[in-house]
Image 1 (tube, rainbow, N blue to C red):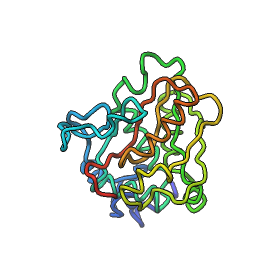
Image 2: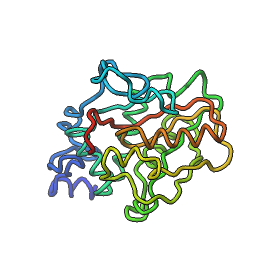
Image 3: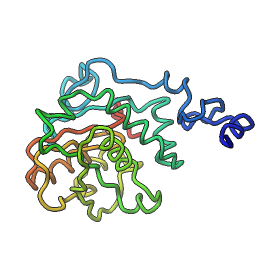
Image 4: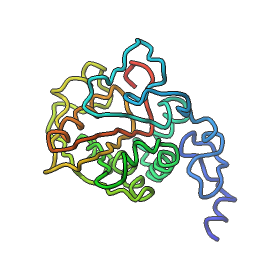
Length: 234
């Protein structure tokens, strides 16, 4: 009752665009939902980029993960929503993103021939970023996805000390192995779905997949809510 009265006086604001007028209980307004840049067309099952590849070759052709998929392109309303989650701490957005992933992801990624042994693994954050935020967006999305799908969430990876994190880094720096230190926490699940918030160059997903393969993973898919569609660092 109190929340309804407050909503009449101060209309709830959209977590993505900040505009008032969203319905109580919704995180984002109907306009932002309609404006989300869904990746609905044919996309490469290896790198998650729309087909055909702009340079004729899949950038994930040598990656340690077997497949990748994303729900939206990292642009417009999607970028606004991700910034609200990562930098404004609007944590309920992770549940919305996980719901959209669960509703739209191809069955091949979330089943991989049956659920036996299949586990979700969130990409670990850089320790400094985790301390600064107090939470990890990828882990929130992965936990919400685990609740929706019934798949177990394994904390199978640890991020080691690296000279820098990936946020704001150049494309070359993102791909530099010296900036990507991951190791497995013991034996890895046989079938893995890596979960991250944004797929940019794929270097982080590749480094995580290498660590999981060294620990015994046999098949690794990668799921993110958003995918950058060009080579510029976002």
